[in-house]
Image 1 (spheres, rainbow, N blue to C red):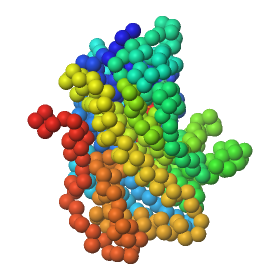
Image 2: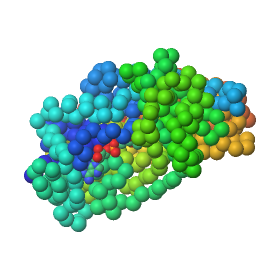
Image 3: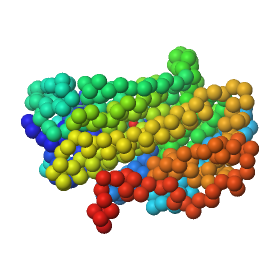
Image 4: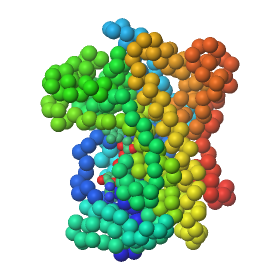
Length: 439
Ligand SMILES: Cc1cc2nc3c(=O)[nH]c(=O)nc-3n(C[C@H](O)[C@H](O)[C@H](O)COP(=O)(O)OP(=O)(O)OC[C@H]3O[C@@H](n4cnc5c(N)ncnc54)[C@H](O)[C@@H]3O)c2cc1C
């Protein structure tokens, strides 16, 4: 079997890359091992940059119709039963067409992308089909070996091979690409259930070591994540579901009567947060995208967005190469040059957010809520924070910012923003395309 690009993994990143290539008339095979949609919870929060990319692909209307918009996320920090601070972060501080986020059920989003891709004759979806290795050991690969349920063992020849298999990536392993890994001192329990009608924006509630995130979904549902200590999981299971319900209702009494819709531990997914970053994104004629190349702590809701943005950048790069009839693999470094710094920046931001909630003793909660309030209150800091998590741009904190965050300096000494500073332009996203081509 022959194709131009072989993609191992039909998750969000593999399908999206498949769609982008197929619409550029590049022949692509996507192999997905799982026969059925996963019942596991995965990323559902689409940040503004991902929405912009969905729009460029003509998918925004459909995705938007399946999603629930989020304009603000509030953080309520309790000291026992007293509200210590209430902080609200707003996407509309960014002057951009897509200054909001969208909650979309993960499998529905994959379905939209796959169905659109299947409209192109150059898109081929092998399912269930598992990538098992390469025929050759050299850096330039020629043949992928795939075990297909109906067609048996397949040999697939391609110009390029992409690992999009998620955190355990056989392509990454065959390339000998190594990972830098971080573990955390907590777990998350995640579950979706019906929501009270007034819960229409993102909310985070924090008391002691508990952290509860609530993100509304369409169809009057809410996706929730509860941070617990590692050692607590077994205790909670032993104590029964009542102890799980109590965590929710003590942080948000309005959830009483809703969280009880969860009637078995089987419906509660344990999420072990990890962070890894690969030392390289490409090798020879192979590339890695999504969780295969980086996973981030889920606190900032970035993992799926990084996967989407990798797929868009690599897709545009490969489309450009085929259009120019120049398949020199050296050009793939452009993909790594654009994506690696952005992904590592968001990985470090997610890591910082995780650390902020990993310590709950002594003065730490007070310091954290003070800093978060300052970020909300000082317009430049608020803009920077939202810009960075939106993926629409990058503006790193300076030493001056840190002094303002802790209150040692007043906010007015920071430069004023008009709302578009440090946003990525087209040539930042796709530096290999010259200005003339955009026109
Ligand atoms: C519980 C949870 C909550 C999360 N919440 C968020 C969130 O709110 N926001 C956010 O942005 N991100 C979130 N994430 C992260 C997000 O889901 C991932 O970053 C995203 O799904 C990565 O997409 P991917 O395509 O790279 O990998 P995956 O979604 O893991 O897809 C990989 C696919 O490859 C297939 N595969 C694996 N091995 C093979 C093989 N050998 N051959 C063929 N196919 C193979 C798998 O079956 C799978 O379908 C969350 C993750 C989890 C687990």
